[in-house]
Length: 171
Image (cartoon, rainbow, N blue to C red; front, side):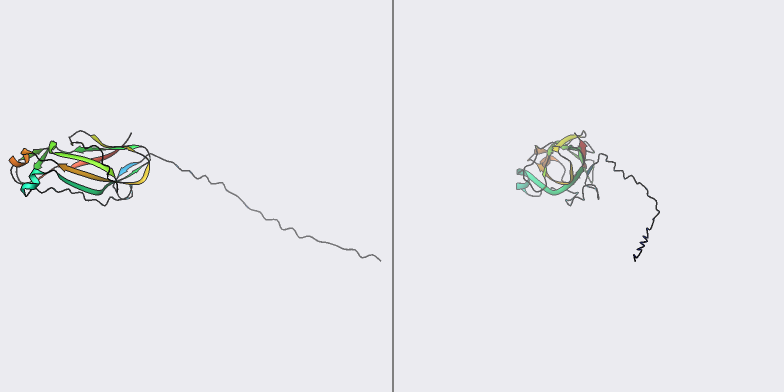
């Protein structure tokens, strides 16, 4: 006698739906210097102070270096420009002025000592750094110099200031 073998297969059918999702990434050029989230916040001071209070200080070049004064985020090659907001240093207490020509400004990559050729700020943009490449966060040190000058000796003895604007521009 033969036994009949009966196999029953249970096949489960799953019904479902699918959905395609497109993920877009749009890249735009960004050139930024120093703001929070824009290359990081530079830690260097926004104030540079020269004090001429001794004979030696009037006779020697005075130098102030500010580490990490500007921090750049750039998606393109860039330069850094400097521009004075006024055509002279202006007294904080009188109508006296000093010419911008007493000041020289240069810059270097953060942590290096190879400063660019110094420029004398004017009310027109001037390149103070050239050759920047795309970066998430590149810091820059700035060097400010005032050489001995008879104008400093002759000027009224008070505090003077000028505001300099640094701009990161595509090249």
